Image (cartoon, rainbow, N blue to C red; front, top):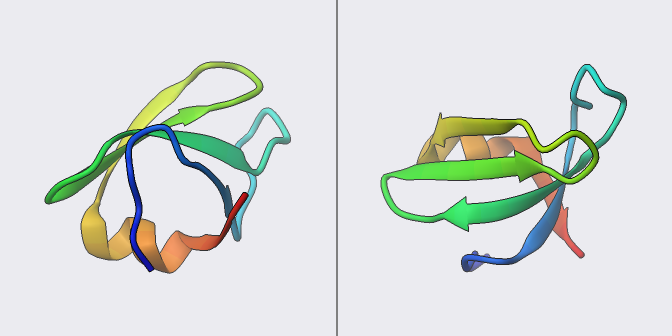
Length: 57
């Protein structure tokens, strides 16, 4: 699956704030994801991010 900046994705595990939806803010070797609910930003290696994402919304 191809991911682009601005896509909203759902993950397997939820963030501590209780949300599973994230916005992709950077794509490359690393993915930068921003929590939709609380705004927290995380950076994950591409392999780990692709495994964690279940679907694009």
